[in-house]
Length: 282
View 1 (cartoon, rainbow, N blue to C red):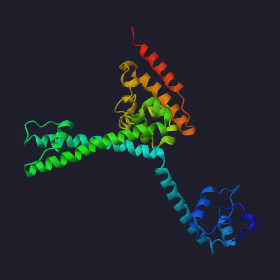
View 2 (cartoon, rainbow, N blue to C red):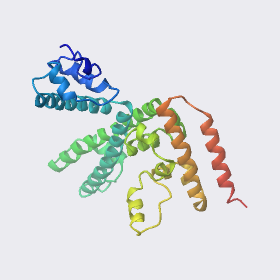
View 3 (tube, rainbow, N blue to C red):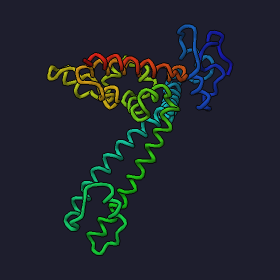
View 4 (spheres, helix red, strand yellow):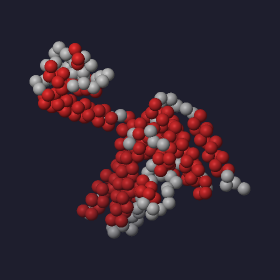
């Protein structure tokens, strides 16, 4: 293809329309100093037969580019961390519910039955002597395996979070850091959130109720699980949550934009929390 002189900045210069991967890359990377009549120029450059052909080709290429970008995004490390923490939460919920169900069911046959994981593991090792016990031991074995999987996924989260977000993980701990990344929709999205939003991540229901005038504004979301918030006196808990959220916001931005570990953030946060807690001391 020989491009028209007026189309030297067009995305389709030197593009083979039959090679979709190369054409899609041109769509993604191409730039032009100013707008132009690209459909007409594409026809004159022999890229396509007519303007309808141009729009059809552009539609195919933009769809292909979008699919590639989505696939790339989903494979990013922060998205893998988000999937892992959600999986960990699902595993815990499933194991808790099934452990309770098995304990109640086993209690109709075994006076020593208990609703806890140790009994579940013991039940899984028994030799069943009835159809009901076969079902119970089989189910207990499967749930016991899921409980083991919790440890494996937790280890993955604890190992991966510091690699994806070193400063956020240092301040919040790996699990809370992963949960914040997941709730925000990714590390980049978290880095762009103001500290006030980070403070109430996970408290969306309470926030919506507040906006409708049905409840007071929430002071914190999932960051309540952090010892700096939950371990602070109630009267000072809002201040502690704001201080923590502020540092977490800074940490997320550093992690996303530079990835450089800043140990001074931990010292600054600890000092700030100590001063907040000192307010309530006699």
